[in-house]
Length: 145
Image 1 (cartoon, helix red, strand yellow):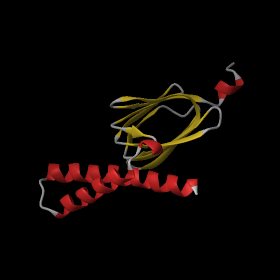
Image 2: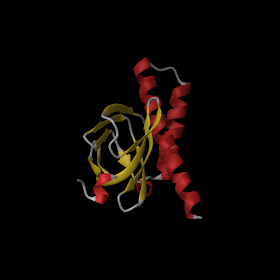
Image 3: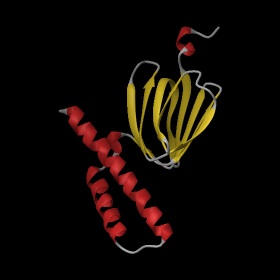
Image 4: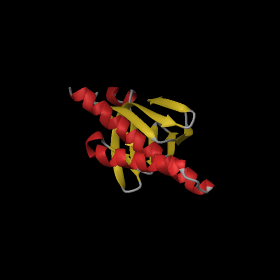
């Protein structure tokens, strides 16, 4: 029989291209996916999820809630272990709102110009990343007041 704490938790590992962003036991994780948000609790059925740019929220076994902006990638749920592989993962305090706003404006301007299909998709990804960052910084500023 598993210990009481382990019974309702699962192991979460969030891996970005440049670092292991988080690893530890959690009670829940909510992540953005191509088909909407997915919530995962302990003993979830095994699955693969295409993760999209947006915000993940996870509650550690101590009850702390963490949020981060993540890029596209994949999530694997298997044997009560969740592994999230993404292009990037950033905590709210790591985001430079001014840079994100400038990146959003650049991407919006590029979308107004004629582009190849590949350039268009690259610009769309840049815009999604900038907007996710700005949403996180705006949300954090509201919560601090």
